[in-house]
Image 1: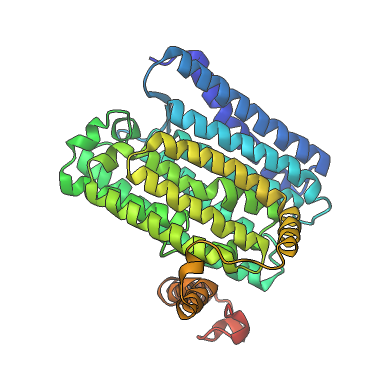
Image 2: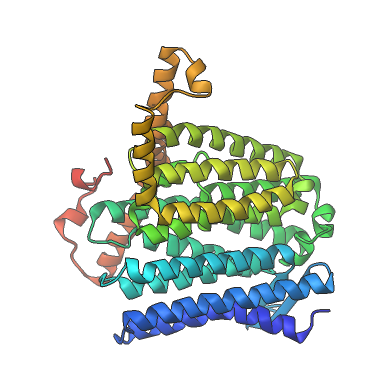
Length: 450
């Protein structure tokens, strides 16, 4: 039984970024944008309040020494007998990850306050940041599939919009569309797992499925549990840029440096890892999914470790370095080392946050180190390979495993083709006439991503 103080703390923790989003978004819609100083203070205060509330809730749960508890705040839809319940699953794992997410977002907001000074999209950036934090907290504390999916979608939507933050740049818009296209695969897998879970278990509650004992996971038929777990692994692979979806990660660096830090250095890329940690009881009953997750994680770690060594800019190098550690975290989860994986996740998120925010200094230090060493020396496995093998490995790493061209053919081009046809259909239904450039079937050469 969960007391009123704990429920109040959790509601404050989740409600603070929601209220911030409503205030900043409402002022933008009314064309009454707040001054930069007010926006910065409100954002920092909201994140600090959310972090403090979730930390206090974590202390309360730790003091009670109880297992996972379910908080219910009614339903936002009553179209069926059950409706869509607003439920939060609170335990040490969910509250700890939520507090870390709010703390990291607070640090990034304080950095962004001065970094984006006089930027035309200043208020828009903080609106998207508050939307992202809301989504992360919903993913962390979700008590049912509906809440989890809403948070998952908010994280993906805000991430794609931040990639295209500088929308006057063609490359930023193109790369944002690429990220959004890959996210559709992740979201489709997540939705399929949710529907199958509802059909097989008769409930969408995560308290039973992802609880400490995983009673409902054990009650699922072996094949059903495996299919649901495999779909979750696919959803995680798309969201965390695991193979074969790693090609979009360096392109996501088109956004502002603070957004790169909070999205692809510390939080967004770890959202999939947290979901697998939460689904550990389900993975326990699906050995095939555990093997798949471990294989994908190991392959991603090897691929990212090779690719990060040949990047020409510091942000892409840090992105692939982050991906290397994410792959190792997935392997740890597959091996059942959940405590180690969580500590690895938290430590790596904080470390990468610092590196991304100090990216220019990192680049300066790297150049100084190379000058002191009079060039980069070969090390590790690289020094043991013959010249031909090393050159081939260099080419594969330089081309990022040729994943970009594969994703273009299989994911991005079909997605944009459907979107283009829907745009023409909408224009025809509305009686509008599209410009000749949009009526053309093939993309113009300048629209193609070189």
